[in-house]
Length: 182
Image (cartoon, rainbow, N blue to C red; front, side, top):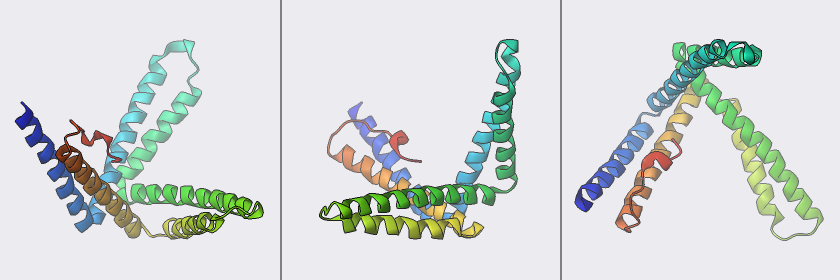
């Protein structure tokens, strides 16, 4: 049994690495694939949300549930019809996060500077880097967005595969790729 488990874990790790390399070689394809998966998830979520909203009877208010379900369904359909839209949306959301995080980190850095805390400049540099990345991501075109998302997927799959191989080699027991980010 131990040999079968070892073989399966090694096979899973190698598959993750191969898929990660493929995503890096074909980042647009990987980005669009991720976008399509997001579209399918949203369509299914919206469909089930509609069924749930109408199936809940008169005991529960339907308004917000219907709104949520319709938005998920419509956004999912838009993404399935135009997968580039999903890649752009994911990229813009990441850019907005980095923008907000960058401002917050710069605020923390300046607060530490006023208190004469050592190493505040590292925080400042990190915040500025976040802002630069945010601007790049927010103003990236559709093809660039799909490429970026594909590269992120590729790096994550390779990292998950390597981690699985290393944990397996170190004898830490079974670890599944389900703990990977993507």
